[in-house]
Length: 417
Image (tube, rainbow, N blue to C red):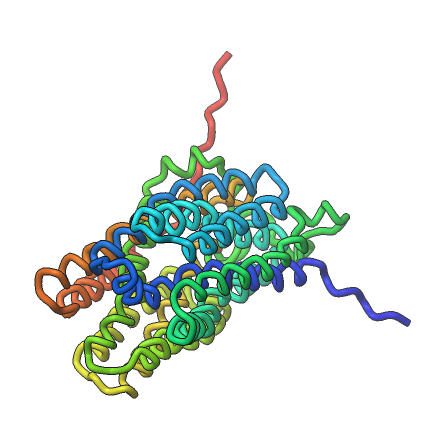
């Protein structure tokens, strides 16, 4: 006799993991490219950071568009189309000969294509799972730290061995190949005559702990955007990513400025990836079953910021590895919690649009954070004050979590006859 068939949603989880590693590829490798773009095009650190800021500006539009598209169209077309645009951006970056070429290829095209990779995966997987939703979101979003572990050393090796341009070509080919996994996606379980995983165990309205199950009817995106809680989450999300992006984009240069090798700098980023893989599963996958999401967020933000003191005060190879592991561990824990909280607070019907709009706070952080760090460096010759600022951002985010509460949907008053 044949055993029970594996629930199709797990195939979508596997495909989502691969797709999100591509999002990480585009994020983590930019910090590796930065010093080499300085040399290739004669750009200052502020100018290179401004390319990333422009990419992030385009990404803000792309994230909102991706959320809208995934709520209305086939995710296979959304992911594959956006991914090809990003791959084209990498390819054309390898042919760039002028500064504005990099702005258009890496800034415009990658910013436009990248937005669909993360948001679409989280929104689709959330539809397929009721039971274990927090865990599967944690699993698929480990694609980001996995890419942090794999791609910075790969990019550093490609650049030092073959040059910046060949590195762009190779990564474009890799992205295009892995993008084929997008054809596994299906928008809803009903498309395959299935029910969401664990749907039969879903508590009735008002039952269960408010931390882990939705207790309200689905909200519209417009209703969500009118709540103070959403904007508090938006701000908290932005501060967390402000810290993350300053570190990820500038720690490679910081390690080199500290007198250590480019190889060690790449492995520092890889350690952030390793710590993130473990943290994403243990913290957001299991700790949220023990503590409220809001308390887990506080712990992650607080210790993410505190780990930066290691990089500031100890300049040995081992200390950067420890910093990377701890920083990645605590950073990774809070990222998957947000889409799960949005689903719990507001329902799943408009989750793509809501989460896509929340993602614009990442873009704002990406535009502001690295530029601020580069400006501070250009005026002080050091990253010290920039890294102190990142600690402050994390602590602000940590204490903001005490204000996040389950929103209550206003009931429409029936008209009087």
